[in-house]
Length: 450
Ligand code: PMP
Ligand code: GLN
Image 1 (cartoon, rainbow, N blue to C red):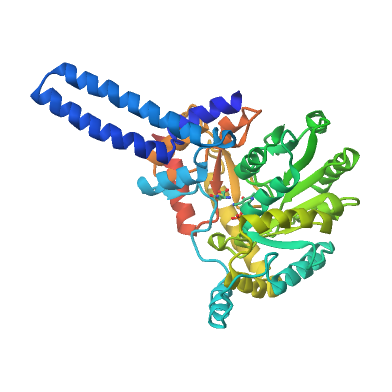
Image 2 (cartoon, rainbow, N blue to C red):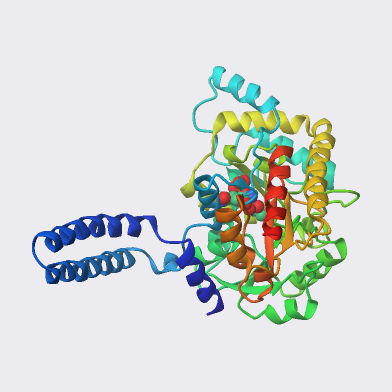
């Protein structure tokens, strides 16, 4: 109910279906002009009649659209990332909302992709992905984490982590199966559980350190629980789950015979001395963990949409069945480029991490001491800040900041279903040029002075 209310609340502000809008506006515009003509040339009653007809047509179109759509998608609207980026563009605001770098990533991938194209690597790749990319991912996992995945049977290349998440939920959830989500959750985790007919159950990561209660996690588990969704480093909080926390989750997964879907797309973006630790490394976990990552994050090219899933053979077999009927295979030259990029990962990573740590520090220091009270993230490229008192809640703040103060942020209450904490927070993305971050912080601070 709470989710519905928050959805409806947001829906009023943001999430109106484009299709419904299109049809609605189409009839409305014409009917209103006919009405206006009647009003001018005939009488007022004709105008009222036309207006009533317009409303009726609009309701009919909306009902018709509802009927043709499946029930599964009936509560789904536009993603908050799309909405805020659109608003940022319309209002010419600095975009600290949607998570993507506003600068180019690893330069070598451009040459590499171009070379692959010129060499005629332009037809379908094998459905699981090109061999050289699967091989190098296997080597990277072995070297960095000591987790061995067979490149032929345990690694699959997908259209971004987004496709991987979709395939995984379709592969393992039956209708009515429950999935545990830590909230704030990444929006696709929630949507993919619903699309697979599953039921999400929530465990809150409480501020200020975004820790969870073991009791709350244990209480969320029922005989219907099939899997736990984990995301570390975490979007939107920037939390990196500690090894102790991962051990607790792993123990619960083993005791209740659950799968763990571990979204680790920000695995190489950890700061200071914090290290990423994959849950699959823990005893008894490799065979029940599905690990998802994305070269879009690692090599700073989110638009290329090359993701991957690592999982034991039996699990991979199921995931590949869905992948085969979803995209079959993904962009061939981009896979070649990513294989080359992974080949130089160890020389690339120190600069990559330093670049993002400097950006994190720039934004954090600019807002520190203000009413935004930034929460220093240990990983990812997101930072939570508090909603200042002058705003009613996160949605009010996000709307006013983008329309009146020229800076787009994400209102995170859309990522919570259980706790109200989201209304007190805002998410900023610091994968932006320094000048974007400086201007964005300036605009945020200006809003406090008015
Ligand atoms: N998971 C998380 C936690 C993300 O933040 C994102 C995108 N930012 C994705 C998955 C999707 O990754 P991709 O762009 O590779 O589809
Ligand atoms: N993951 C990105 C974010 O958190 C957005 C990706 C998308 O727009 N689908 O902002």
